[in-house]
Length: 192
Image (cartoon, rainbow, N blue to C red; front, side, top):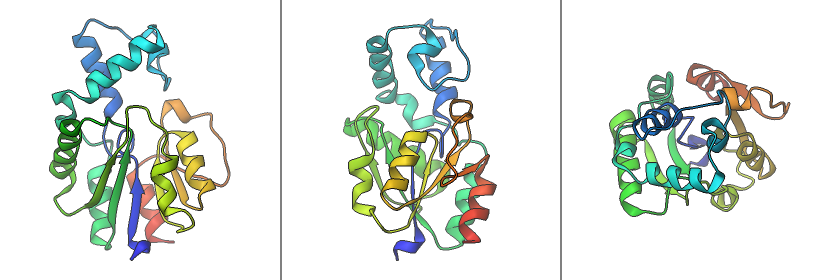
């Protein structure tokens, strides 16, 4: 059964966290000063501690129940479900149970009720090494937008796929498949 399970990050892969975060920050009076960076403290020109606090506040807010799908994620996930796949979502959202419930509700609303076998919520900004460890050596697909998390999956014997964003555009690793969208993810997985 493991060959029909896909491990996936949520934000920047399934859901458009960044644009929604930018809207939320704007509603709080913050303006972006640098485009195309992953580090939100740099993007907004604020201190790292202040930014971490704001990200946690956002991740534990009602906004988590209403994130839009990223690009063509809905159609891509639907095609993979149709091909018999299910997903395990591993996300560095928050340890807050209500935030987890909002995340699950949002995913069900976007992708369907029986798509996710599990939604593992780690602390805000947490590394994914420990959460991926149970899947070590399985050769399962691991979908990510953060290069260091894709590398972590690769080191654990997973097939990492990195979805392209401005923040990872300069990253190069021939052992990690890069894709622009979910149509390409579907092609890679279905043709494997």
